[in-house]
Image (tube, rainbow over all chains, first blue to last red; front, side):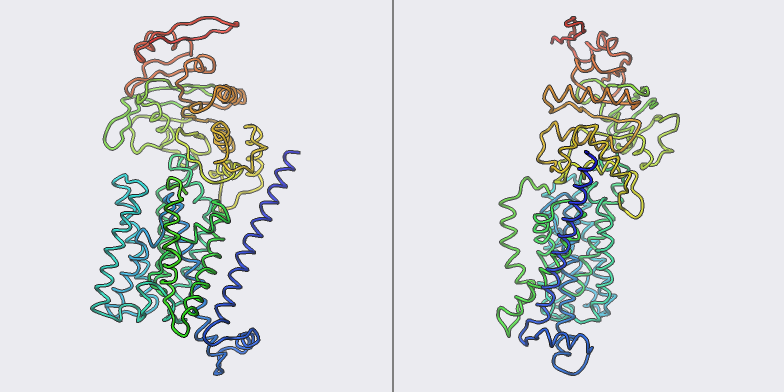
Length: 341
Length: 252
């Protein structure tokens, strides 16, 4: 009797999880179609279908789809999913709802490394992605290790991140001042945006993000056990420092890959995990994949708004996100309960 | 059986234990007692390899602790810690974490893991609360959830650090009765307690500690009647009989 009840409950849970992911996937699909079809030059669904099945060509619809809208939409989806999952991992591992790639210096580290790489004249996509990853990981472990060595509180991790972010952003600005091309030739780089995205630059980042998100989704039990506290996690057989450092490396890899083509896109890694947690709950098996869907769709919609609000002029997507993210962050500070997850 | 000999443990270079020796017999409730800060928690954490460094010998069923990896240790000993996080997850999923030591690739729990969780929930009396969020439970129910997680771990030994703290009187009795039942099923229970009445009624074996050392060990009544206990705590103890049972009272 009890066993049957539990089985039914288990089936119900599986069903609600499937529904949640289906809703997330639908949101991504709708956002992506809107991102492709809506713009200064509109594209009807029939033209979109024609462009898709006829492949790259010389007609206006084909050129707009294959060379402008598709790379841009792909970039939005990848950056949204990558940063959202990165933020979710960081918040879980540090048990701190205020932590995110933008706050603890991950994006700033990646941004500085990319600017330095390009400032030295190296523009190849893999080199830029590699530099972004190296910068992201260096700044992550700098902030986390300083906080750990000083037995710092959760707030200190955030404050340390703010200090490191300010320092690294100043370094990035210095590099860009002397070598303007260091900003990936993109005016959006400092605030994040997709105006200079192309397929070639996306490929290495796409590989890293897709593999990173897939790997993160297989390690959800590790994230949940870690959130029980170090002693309990160790007593359950977990190598806590290995898992924590491994997960932070994965988060840095994802954020770095995103910075390599989207610039320093703030707030996605902070806002999306919070919204996702409210909808999907805190259990990582539901939260992480749903955050990926939500992040992908959210960035697509923000980019669409950034393109359309002042059309034909375009706002960098990062600016629009800061308009949304700033008030949200303030609301979060006012409503958070003791800094817990 | 778990045996420790001449155990010395340090935190950040500061020595906390100064040569503790003790034995924890199989299928019994062993209780560590002593003043705050005397090293009780550090002793049990050393057995679980949760302290950064130690010297001395710890063996589990004759096997040195150094020869047991963390995963194997987690299949032998479960731990209900003193400080408990309250993650925003359901009781069922919380108890499922007890199966983590058995998780292999692919990282998915199997049918037998779910069966172990259902059995643990039943033993802890939490079947009806399995879908509830941990944060929505009372202190006693959360304690049961952590206990159920330890049961799902399916180990021969369960270590509990002050399991009755923060529980009301009824829940304290329930927790101790539950521990007693587990020993009847063959499990070994090691716990840290401050309630001497509970020690008298439930402990089979007591280890008295002071200043990072073991002072005396033996049966509950033997240790509680000892002059060492009075010296360690700086109190006087007395005993009386009521309802065919022996009780202890303490005087400062």
